[in-house]
Image (tube, rainbow, N blue to C red):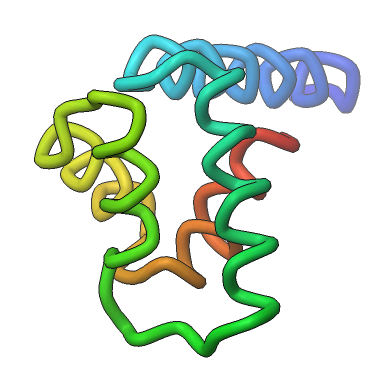
Length: 94
């Protein structure tokens, strides 16, 4: 397989992965970015408690189904508030 074909296949794969990720979002991108901003500010003033307390607070304030979002976060490598920023937020940058 030549380099151009490999490059094209890799690009197609990444595009499909991004599309699957987008389709799996339980919230709008905008609301996710609001969550990331909220966590960024809150975690400057208090240490992560190794739980989703801050995330849950944000979701409750926005009347969002917490369990659905939590399942999504865990499926994407976040098991506490700081991991939402470190593991999930970076997925939005890919």
